[in-house]
Amino acid sequence: QVHCKVFEDNRSAITIAESSKFTPRTKHIALKYHHFRRYVKEKVIRLYPISTHEQTADIFTKPLDDVTFLYLRKKLNGW
Image 1: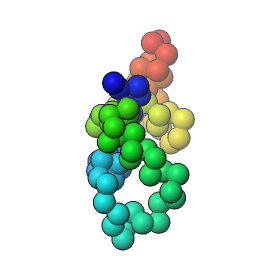
Image 2 (image 1 turned 90 degrees about the vertical axis):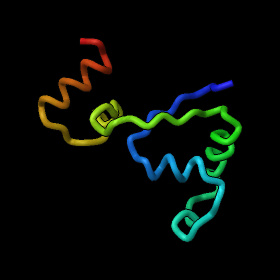
Image 3 (image 1 turned 180 degrees about the horizontal axis):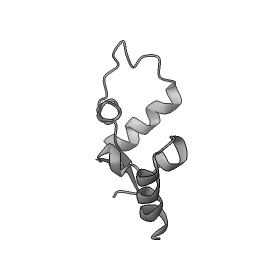
Image 4 (image 1 turned 135 degrees about the vertical axis):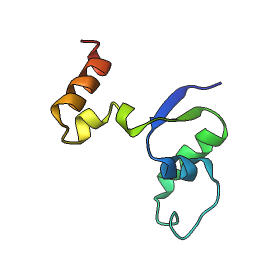
């Protein structure tokens, strides 16, 4: 049963989370983050790819132009 949905706009991050392989590019990732992979494999966490324009979290993490800011604020708050 899915307990958590994660909406991700970075396709590489989704690929890393869904893969159980260690590669030279992923071996530096801290052990505690590999628990996320286990939850994805066990289907406790479900990953959903979304467009970068739909990533609501960007309102908190990036400088945005007025149009994008207003769009994401409406999507977040409903106004």
